[in-house]
Image 1 (tube, rainbow, N blue to C red):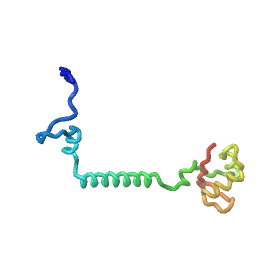
Image 2 (cartoon, helix red, strand yellow; image 1 turned 90 degrees about the vertical axis):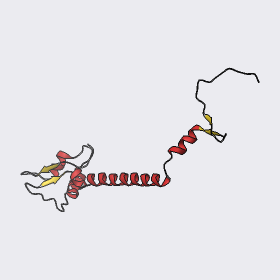
Image 3 (spheres, one colour; image 1 turned 60 degrees about the vertical axis):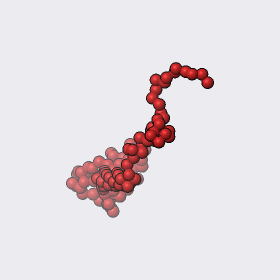
Image 4 (cartoon, rainbow, N blue to C red; image 1 turned 180 degrees about the horizontal axis):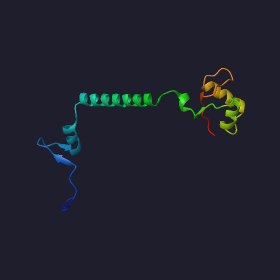
Length: 127
């Protein structure tokens, strides 16, 4: 081999230690910085618990009576019937009888009788 005066402008990735062995610089750095395994386990468990508790809190906050979230509410006026309310508020493609039964189910009404001033929750369907 010929003698070369070439010198790299990049840092060497290998370095000589006092024991005259070659050690990869990144591995040596990582050994110095490496946290104890018990500390990593505690951090991992703590973060997992925080995520689980946070998700539980969010799901609990948004959970509720689905019937109240399903649609609009109306107040029964003089002369209103379930059939008339259904004709006005049902989706276009839906049968009126099906919507009447849905109103009865959502409001837990057994018969077709409704009273003036009664608040009815309308079932929410895509229009």
